[in-house]
Length: 117
Image 1 (tube, helix red, strand yellow):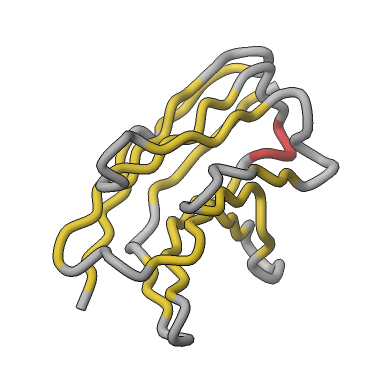
Image 2 (cartoon, rainbow, N blue to C red):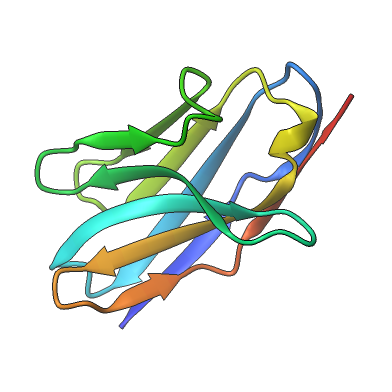
């Protein structure tokens, strides 16, 4: 069992920055990748950025490439998302996910990001 708790959301003006954090607790060995996803009102949840734990390979959705950076700490107990040059269309609830090699997945409760124009 893994618990994920996101923090760092808030309200910013367009062009601003935020850094999201996701703290993991419980059994974290066996995680294949961790990622950030977001969901805006009336829309489906979409992936934003992923990081594979073994080689730290990172992947980004085209909509955030060059603006967002995903990272993890050495012990893989925390996941971060540095968001720069925020746009109103980045407004959404942001969720942390842990995907295990055995197929199990866990989600955090989310943190809200609101970007005003």
